[in-house]
Image (cartoon, rainbow, N blue to C red; front, side, top):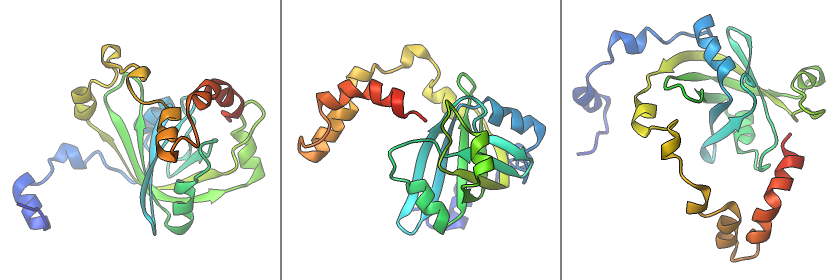
Length: 202
C-alpha cells in the first residue's frame, strides 16, 4: 500500500510525543550552541530548479560560527568546484543542516534560509593558513532541534571495529576511470591525491 496522504501517514504513525516537539525552537539556545561549536562535520542540504543536493562540509570543530542566536556562518572551503549547493542557494534560500560530533550519538538539526556573501572583512575572519574562503554562507535560523541517538546507535557509526578498510571499496581514481572510459582518474590520480590534498585543502 502506498502512503500518499497525511491522513494515511498519521493513521500509521500517530502523532509525535511532547519530547519530539518541545525541543524545537526558532533560535540557537546555549545548550544547542555547544553542539555546533563541537562539530567538525555538517551535511548541508539545499534545493533548486534541478532538484535536491546534500553536501558534506568539514573543518576544525566550530567551523560553523554562531554569529548570534538567529544567524550561522559557514565558510565555503575548497571542494570539487561544482558549487551545486551555492547554485541552489542563489535561486532558493531554503537550507537544512545536520551536525555530527564524533563519538556522540545525538545530532543537531537546523532549518533556515541562506544567502552568500563575499564581504572581505568577514572572509578574513575565516582565514586558514593564509587562505580565505571565496564566500560565506549566511544562514538565518528558522528551526533548531536535536535528533535522538537511535540512528547512530543502530549504525554503530563511531565503533572503530566496524570501520571499513578503504581498499575494500573502489578508489576515487577507479571511480573516475570507470565513469570516463579510462580517460580520467586511474592509479596516477590516486597516487597524486595526497599531495593535491596538501596543497589545495584551503
